[in-house]
Image 1 (tube, rainbow, N blue to C red):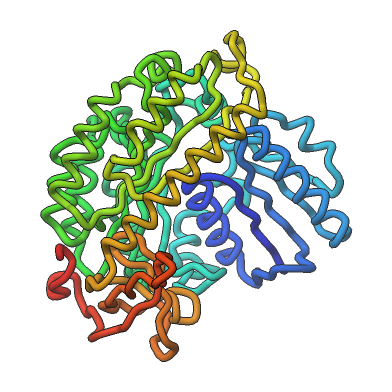
Image 2: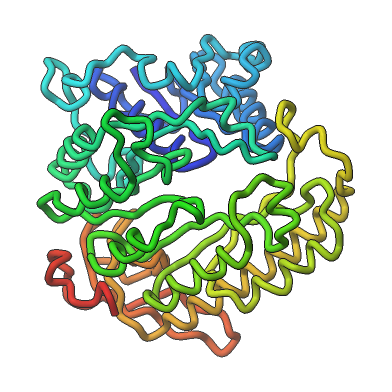
Length: 430
């Protein structure tokens, strides 16, 4: 059977799709293919109306180009609007999020290679070099704009021992970098008995033997504790790459969004990270056009962001999600105003990225080769092109290229000696 998996949205969906990939391979005889697949799994997102539209367009295109394909749709859009999705051409099955990882009936033994048809996934399969693991799903924060608590449910964590075993397995398969993700990762372990915490999980991962490093996916600002920052700063196992959603720089808007922190609290967090780890990548999500956002509110973003230590932004126009608190709020912002504000924040985001990359020029960073070996992703998440000759999934030390005369950073680099192991890489904290 030839199959294809199409993934929309967050890293949690990426982790889920990777698990589905393993399940299909464990069934025996399954082969991934980009076109003319017998089975196409579409793993959808529903965080915005644009995400819903993108999924519908993709499903219609697949049905048109490959009318014999059986299309199975899962993810948040499929959970939220099952009947709407089922009516799309070519769709033979709609699977809710809570049934997603059991849809193929593969046992843990089969997935992990202990059963009669086990098939371990390795670096390079379906183009993946790093491995993404979901530590928990669900969210109970109830931000005013977010539909995800409805589509993902209450927070549910996987036990520490289970995650350690899985990471040991993928490390043994050759993966050298693992991204730890969750819908509300900072809430990890609160639902377990006995209760655990994200810090306890990270310490357990730090104790795993072998050449594997970790990225911690998006953390809510209130969950990025001083102890977690200290662990990242003090141990080369955890890469200096933070994603800390801000959403808005006006406290009035944060309160209206039901975000449980103030700008001053956020500022102190990221300033502290930048002081301790000046080479760290620090990204943020921003929402423009939230109901009631005035020109004065928006100006708070323009005041804070350019001088902040943030290194990149993900900018989202507010999208009405029926069933959320914000959907019923007055003061909707006109679409043209939302587009203009979004464009202005994206310009700031591009400037922050240029500033960070320019600051890194000339430095030597550890990284991992991807694709055909000519692309390196550094520990602090810069993507650098190098000359051919280094295999995929190789640790290297790379000197970041200089800024050109046109002020554009040329993300090219020179490769030095391979970074054989984290403990001896030397430049992980440069």
